[in-house]
Structures are given as C-alpha cells and as structure tokens.
Length: 146
Picture 1 (cartoon, rainbow, N blue to C red):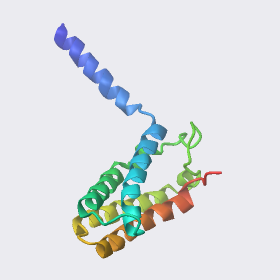
Picture 2 (cartoon, helix red, strand yellow):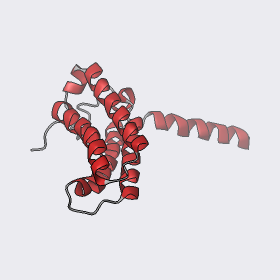
Picture 3 (cartoon, one colour):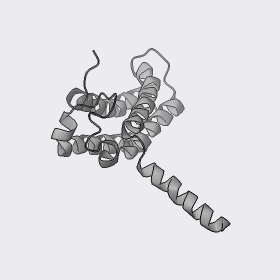
C-alpha cells in the first residue's frame, strides 16, 4: 500500500511540473540572464576590473539558461495574454523567427563559454555576440516597458 501511495504521489508531482506557469518560468530565466549580464557589462564598460572567473561563470549561466528556453513549453498559445508579461504577440505570429533567435542565442552563448575569454578584449568580443542576441530578440519580441 505504501508503494502505491508513493507511486501515485510521484506521478502527481511529475504531472504538476507539466502544468508549471510558463510566464513565471520564462521570467525566472530572464531574471537570471539579467543578473549574469549585470556581472559582465560593467567589466566590458570599464566600470569594474576584468575577472575571468566571474565572467566565465556569468557566461555559463547565460549558456545554461539559453538551453532552458524551450519555446513550445515557455511560450504556449494563450500565455501571451494569460498574465503580466512583456512577451510581444509577435512571438506567436512568428514562432519560427522567434525559435531561430533562441537557437542563435544558444549557439553564441555556448561558443562564448568554449572560448573562455582570458582577457577583457576577448570578453568584449564574445559578450558582444551574446548581447547582440539579447538586444535583437528584445527589439522584435518584447514589449517595451512604459
């Protein structure tokens, strides 16, 4: 009987994960991305000294988060209006274009980690590629804050 209860509990828990809040999930990923960018951007701007370990850690976070962006799961039909979101309706109008942006972000973030920038100039190059993805996607697929 205990095994049955455990099995049912495990299934219920697994099932509830499938019904997670996609808006909250994507906001959590974007918030983590923002923190990671907040580590690197001041280095690139010369506001903080270059720290190779901190930069690589932040790049790894961006790459890991890029892998978490499952467009179908995080941007299902209906989630464009189902809550407080900055996701533009253009995502659902051009899902293929949005997916292409996500794929490019994944590739560039992963490449930046592999490059493991050892100095500020290398970080500027790699981070520039990653940040261009962020800006390009936000320009097209994000509602500007008012």
